[in-house]
Amino acid sequence: MNDVVYLNGDFIAKDKAKISVLDRGFLFADGIYEVIPVYNSQPFRLPQHLARLQYCLEQINLTNPNSDSQWQELISRIIARNGGGNLSIYVQITRGCSQDRNPLNEAETAPTVLIMPSGLLVNEQQITTTTATLLKDIRWQHCDIKSIALLANILLRNQAEQHGFGEAILHRDGVITEGSSSNVFMVKNHEVYTPMQNNFILGGVTREVIIEIAQAKQLKVHQQDISVEQLLNADEVWICSSSREISPVTAIDDKMIANGDIGAVTLLLHHEFQTFKKKLIS
Ligand code: PDD
Image (tube, rainbow, N blue to C red; front, side, top):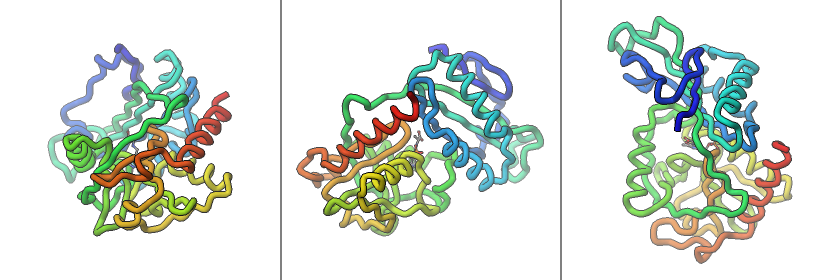
């Protein structure tokens, strides 16, 4: 449990890493984050994760503290210092420390930069199914920014878990957005559907990989609005993220999807995803 983290230039034990109470991330959630899966010591889709990091920093008017090659180097060192293998790498950048607790004063110091590893569940052998509940998307209007302000996501996820569901699938006025920490896909008549990328969803890196591999398998992929009704009547539904990969949704509230079985398209894409991953990291 004594992982090594990177904090503002130092490599130190996780339990020794400390930030100031004046850090704007701590006081105002004034920062962004990224989660990068690492398989067999190799970061998966690192350029895409770094591009999203850059996008999010631009959206909140923060200068990227590192070039892509510096990030690559720091992440490689964290992987090596933590024994390699399969890991999840968490990167957080906040606007640094305020002089006092004034939300409108921008930080006068450098940003706070944290790189922290944790364990990663790998679904190579088996596919992990889940269940979901439909909840109203109560988040803000910039869900394309991977903001560290996750209170709404946490409340939604907790609500789902309290009722025995593995994820909350969210909707705005009856139109599906995404999961509390995942993107959503469905299949109808052998065609794949996922909500289009806009300010209401995070542009998931796993989502992007799935679209690529589905298209490579000649599947038709529609990025468009999905209504609650369409989702409930889908032949197959899955959620996806860097930490859960492809996770079939066997039921939404009291409605079974595909009799609770894992659908053929889901299985095919799961298999292709594992093959794609292995190719990149071998
Ligand atoms: N969550 N949508 C939301 C709201 C998310 O939090 C995530 C990821 C995704 C999927 O993005 P990606 O495929 O790039 O992981 C979509 C990460 C894993 C997390 O917060 O831990």
